[in-house]
Image: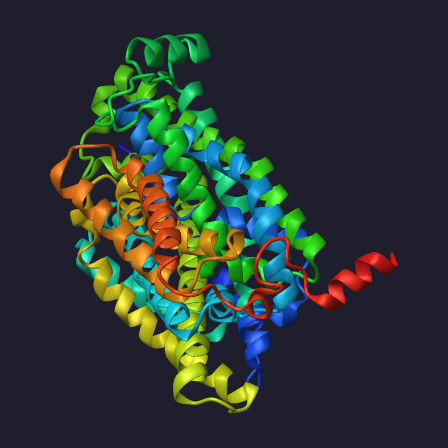
Length: 503
């Protein structure tokens, strides 16, 4: 049985060195905070749009999505439909604010709309959510290292976390985005090779592979059950997916920081549209790769011997079934994908920490170079913290669902706060905080006392936070009209109204 060869190892090492060299090439000793965190706000919309997709294309997706369809079906693909459904709302409601205000973090907007307490609390919630994601991003490729080298997973976690933290500390936002572009192209090619090779390795080709998958239930796509306990019902995946997709595009610093790097509002919109055009095709390819693997291993069960973890089925196929060199490319692609996502995650965590807390509360008025240096130190610290969290990431269960489980608890209240800020003039700081607390409590109660699909947690959190936040705001005086001009949809600042009228 074929194993990982010296040539494959050379391909992996060479690929990672190239990625590290590209990332390091953007290192500038005396860079400014604007350059380090936002790429100087000079990025082209095309790489930014690809980077938005790459933000979700870590080993969690590259390994977890095929592993899910290998064991179950195609139903989770409905989660991706949330992106094109929610993109018009994001572009219409949120992009104008973010583009006009020249923000470093989304939570700066909440201070302008409400107060510093709302900014600090939401920034902390984001950091909890993103830290969990980065931990999973480190853990997932560690499964691959374990499969290929036999090293214990905990040692793999420490190795991957330490290496990526070092690389991330050197690179800024430009390095993050351009390495994202490279890894997206490499991963897309790799998944396509997996699919084509798996189908081609089935005796009888595509017709037999299709029939085997159909008989095994792996091509099931619709679950029209209205039972809220059904994890993959169409309604749970579609409605829950809308929240899980909209929340990152409006509240998640790791995503928004990419958008903040664009040159204009128009470029920001183009990046989001590009993401929506590509997200469903790449998601479909990932799940179909898992279906193809199911057909291959169903007809060749002896080849599955020694699978250490179901989430590692795709790299197992790459190592054993693909030609020498191509196996190395697939493993390298998984490494690079998670390195890029972890790099961006740590960068955004550091940005939120430095801008929302260090600069705002502890050391205001320092030079841009000072904050850039603080960012590099913060990156190293966040990398160490995320690596420690990754040691426990395996307890969250299926890789394809692990991050969504964590996200479902917090994404709803976070999105509810931003919707109250942008859509209502009556909402105030005390009201939105009470609403978020109510949303979090209700979601936690549902999670502990029912067996509902956790995809419902996000929509429940949004609805409760918005309704309770608006109602609670009525207990206090309305915000002064002048304080919300330019921060609520339909209330343009005077200078912008005059510009529109003059045109």
